[in-house]
Image 1 (cartoon, rainbow, N blue to C red):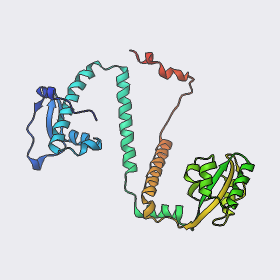
Image 2: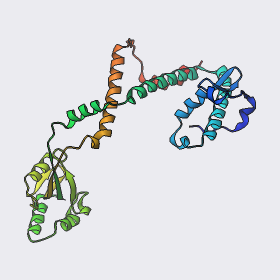
Image 3: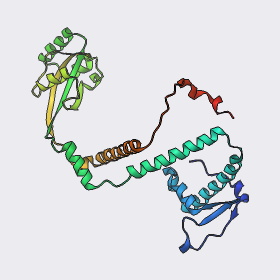
Image 4: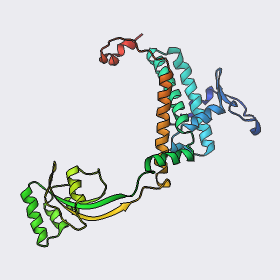
Length: 279
């Protein structure tokens, strides 16, 4: 949002009396610049696109500031319009196109999502899911199998796993005692996962090789995690449904439109040739 302009242009305004409160509407004229009228509707429309930090300003400040900005914009635009070039004309066409497209996308995407739609999407994503087993494991990453065997021997002699991880692990989890936190199937590389899934709680693995090196793994804990409730994923489902609705509308309208792309060959670098816009 451009900062509110200073009041220098107010001398150019022909201010008109505001109608009585009960007859005010979007067409109520608040000012005019030459033959161009600036209405209450213009001010309200500008208010709707203000960033949040401006929305909390007092109403009288917003009304005065937005009206003044609209007036000064009109003063400048009226002059600029008399000397507009090809770049500006094309830019205006692009701005209009983008504004209208964004308006339609907002209208489609922000339409209410019904409870039936949410329930159907929840059922599709989570309805057939049972409990998922989660694993909590720690590991020590080493460069060679011999190093991994040496760690296993040390553990067998009573060494503390977390201390060995801090001392010997080459992985990023080493300073944290090798802890990897909770994970489910598909989150780790297959060889690592298979080794974890074969362990009992508290059991230490044989050396496990992956593309990262050699691992010694201990399974700390397991738990069964039920699927999330509808309320827990409501916001995520709503966002997904809105995105899908916008994408479906885009595809539908594009398919119905008459679009012609002439078979021409141009050098892509031509888009940087600003001389083409010189008049």
